[in-house]
Image 1 (cartoon, chains in turn orange, green):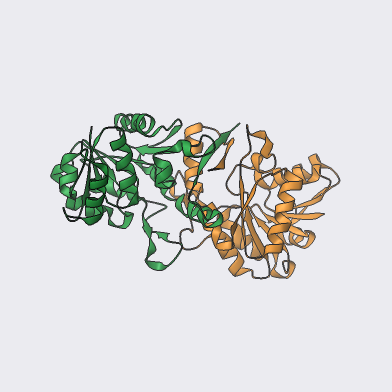
Image 2 (cartoon, chains in turn cyan, orange; image 1 turned 135 degrees about the vertical axis):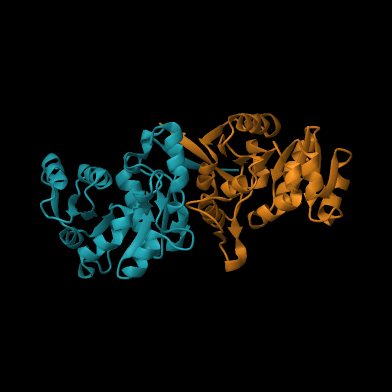
Length: 216
Length: 216
């Protein structure tokens, strides 16, 4: 499959590398088609990897991943070009973290709205599926690196898009337990988990953890 | 020990009943000293149980529990009387859920502040320890009712108060894993977990769950 990843940071690279291991073709999109981080990554990853602008990556991908910083996501999608988006699934792994007011960061949107909802409202031609945003990227693509099973959540308005992304999480990354929280408004829940995640990160001095839902 | 519980709802009653099982003396505090729910509870629980006003319960307790609805907590503590609070630990299990704008409720404070911080700022004579607010009350007092171990979090400015509450969680309720998230500002993390908790509750159609932190 052809996958377009918006963002060239550690999250985009980690997801991209994992998908290339699985023999998919991945283009990393950036503001500039000559982005240096993307160029290094393409060199490492070989023939299935490519780079381009946000618009190039959006055009290229049958499925898109939003791996940009949450504060930049709406503008990046605008740059990606609304014409390149219709009908495509956007797997939104971003969080609206605002680092401008010191540490720990606060959320730039929460409670009665979420970044995922803003993206879905602004780009109704996309099928936005929020997932994976509740953990560090190494665990996103390799859930079995932790001691025992744990959970990933999924939110979105389109049942078929969520089914496609659930299969991708299972088959490409090895997720065993995907919990469907409901429509895209449920992304408020996972985005608002970030403040607890950040405190746990501070407590453990490590990002190598995730949550598991324990039931009766 | 003498324990004062502010609030006569299911949370206060459940915590109170568990502490009475453990042979503590518990007073449930309400707006009125004749509160009917409290009267029924006292009748059920026997000689170690009593009821009174918020001020009576605050005066009575060596340790206090805030089991009021979060939207009412500050006003209830005002009614409890600042003179009855100095030096006392307030175990704050409340959440600032605002049901006035429909379901699911939103938080009346979050992100750059929390209810626990507001309580601590308004009543600096209290040692506020936020805990147990991330689960339903049946699990608060009986963590072994779930299939496997899971976690409770604790936030507060006073190390000795947190140590006292940690022992209470362990010895009275049977908690095995208490995670200290840091000072009272870390209560933002656990209060902001509520939107995810509410979505999980909607998904499972059951409140009988909690989260476990899984590490590497």
